[in-house]
Image: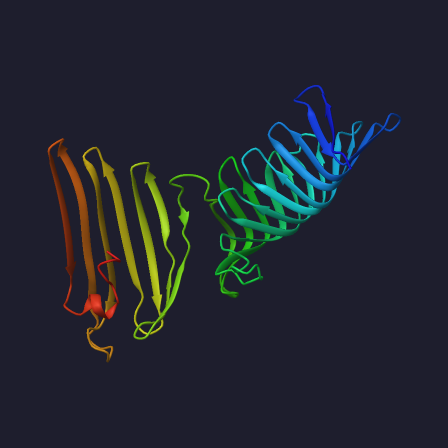
Length: 308
């Protein structure tokens, strides 16, 4: 019942630390077999499993049962059977589940890791919770399914082949290739989480923002908006931080009629801006502007002061 520990130094590289309820070593085959609450650590990487077999001749580690591998960046991979190199960085995993340190989840029937790049076959990605507050499975608000999913932690990107975007389990978009940030970086350009809602006058509303990181101190978000009851609209939101303070410029535009009969369509929209500047330790100024093309536009498109 006692926990046993074993530290083995291999050249080159840091030592491998084993902790388990039972440890066996065969001098002839040079195989270390650890069973029961196994913990293997090397160079910041951690492996836990019910059973681990390490072949010192081939340098391969095979883990079985409730396998969890956490790399130095905090990304956790799960599987029932895992084959890894003794660096605990490269290998193959059956029933691959990868939980990123940033909160996203990737799952696939099988996968492999080479130079810390994970490749999942027939994979799916979602940043949403897959269980409710009671621990029961639920359909994510949105997810991306693909024939192949690749996570590159160095570039902080996720790439897809034959990607399908699903919202509430309904396929809405197909793309032969797709890529987006893994949410671990700062100011990374890419698609943001879409917004879905139902409005009494606008119908079904879908907003899909795209975030463009122009520089560390300025960015632009472009958001196409689709409605079932009125014409689509486009929203822009520009932000910048100057040495004196931040300011923001935004607007939304569409081509529609002021009347419900749909005739006499024209360009309509709204513009807003706000900012705050510190001119000296004793003087500061703030401003805010909201303009609309007509009296009914903001109310018709359900745009409140909170939105702008």
